[in-house]
Length: 135
Image 1: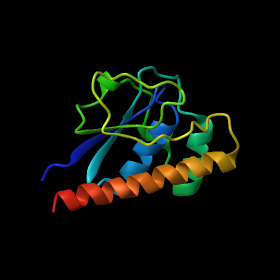
Image 2: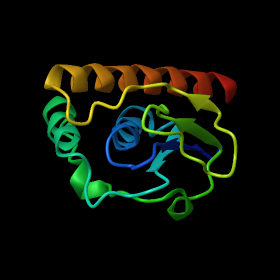
Image 3: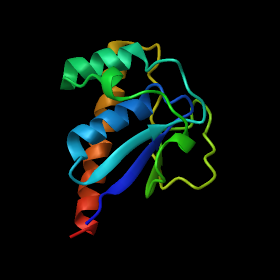
Image 4: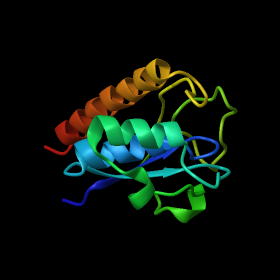
């Protein structure tokens, strides 16, 4: 069985979608391949996201990830929007799901960790859903 490809999309591909890619690889690599992308890019991943994901999970996103556009990733089976509070990205197709997550950029560590926890919980639910469908 080939793994599903899941793309996590937000406008700048610098924070929420990068966290989702990292946690998808960490928690669900046996069920799906994780990619993140945006309709625009930033020169670097949000430093607070990098710091907190490293602290909480030991994952160094700067070593394995970078900001990229939707055209730079393999064609996904499932596309998830992180939330449209920063503007909804247009990728030429409908999203399979919108997680509606607030953008924690520039906010406190507590707000950041709340969003990280929401992303982790969504990743685990998605992993279980995909695993059940492939049985």
